[in-house]
Length: 585
Ligand code: DGT
Ligand code: CA
Ligand code: CA
Ligand code: ZN
Image (cartoon, rainbow, N blue to C red; front, top):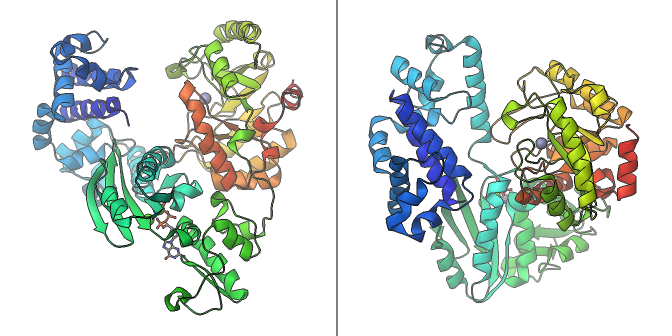
């Protein structure tokens, strides 16, 4: 995590705290603005400060939105790791009141009101407060109270699980660190991360090495470790903190000869392991984390039995008469009967069909976006900026879109390596109508229709809304169909079966939005769509060049759904893809 984000967070907290204490608007705004500016800086704020301390304040004030006072605080934070003023503020406002702000729908004003009027100083307090009492808080209607209750329940359900997009980069760093140690022969993360789940409880590392003491000692003293939970012969556990991410990390050191068996066991899922063990027993064998053994005696390794297979996962699956099962499929959802059908992989993806430019809220120009996509070996990139009902995202009015189409046509000439499609991510309004009229939509090569607002509709209304968009003859793809945000917003809960039927009938594709905050459709819903034969698009929704990397999260979600490349329109060659797009014109 960049230090920009960490520093910005402190300023954010400061602003919220001041607001809770009823401080002057201008002061609150100064912190809010500084937080936003720092978070959006393209330079690393730490590097800016450390480049030359005596002139740091002066150079920081050159950034729009950072005055002298804020600049001094930035320098203090970078130099000392803390902000004195924030520490003082934390003496006055209980930490639990800040916790309230984590609940969607509760801002500083509401937190302040609840704290002052009812003495609510933690989420626990809030839970214990009756609806009647809560409704006594100024500007707190019945509906707000109901929404807060829902948000609390949702937060509890998602618990402390970390989104895969935050857990995976951390895991990759830890893996690199362990791999570099002398004598390490094998190292891999197992568990839910290897299976590609959308959120991760803890990280599970496996190491086979010559010097287990060295690996263990290094593991518990890695830079991000904040607490050592266990340090034992075969298993060690630590808590790490990297930016805003706090996770438990387990390390198991195993002999190389049984590495495959251990990797298989600790990759899970538990349910998949149970199935495999049942299968082994039917075959007169015993499977555990030390290998696959003949005979059904428990813990055969204790009596010195040699396993039939243990070194690699492949050998073990083969001995059970199975092809190797991709980790993403190991959820006991029929994977043992799947056979050798191909599973989609990142290298199959040849087109990006949902991306934004500076015309709306993206950071790249049309040409920059096209060159980025071409550099990734794609034959097609669709420019799909936001439509007019998204003013925060600088959505395009009809006139702007018409000019944008012309600019896209020109860019297409200028960048011959790739086909640039003129498109739109058009809003599906709350009643299912689209944000542009048909005449304008018909001029576009590709239409991605997505819900962005009114995401708390009841399921029946949401279903009608999405059905209308799916059946619209000019729509190719439904973008992030539910609008959910992992761990933060549930989004729409439409009747998926109805959507799938309609998508099949009207030949409309459903999207897997690969941004790890979305992963929408989610794996289980996607599986139903794939099984029914619906066309699927996997798009990164890129707003910047690095967002193209999100594709791996989308593809992993698709693999969890058992998707073959064929189902995904982004894998098709240019002729086939363009032909299908034209069939809706
Ligand atoms: P998480 O951490 O909640 O995201 O999910 P996992 O799947 O990583 O679960 P975790 O960390 O508790 O354990 C890692 C793997 O170890 C799990 O997927 C399967 C295996 N495992 C752990 N405990 C058991 C167990 O009691 N029985 C079996 N069969 N497998 C287990
Ligand atoms: Ca785990
Ligand atoms: Ca674990
Ligand atoms: Zn988008």
